[in-house]
Image (tube, rainbow, N blue to C red; front, side, top):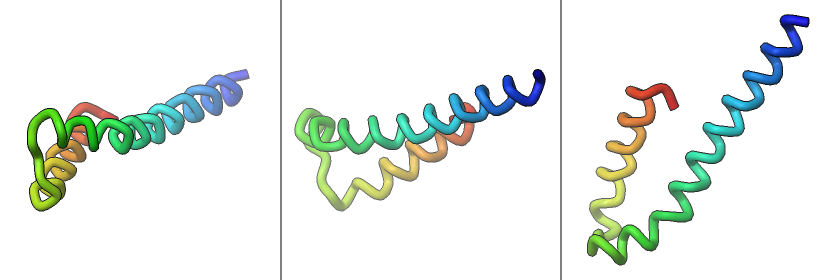
Length: 58
């Protein structure tokens, strides 16, 4: 019975991880327009987002 819960919780964690990447890809263009970001600064923002996610367990 414990293995079933472990599999279910693992699947939820994977789906949350995939969902956060999908959400970021959808919000990138509206955020660029709203804040006036250029493509040259995109790498820096992606790095910040990745560090934030790693720090808070995404």
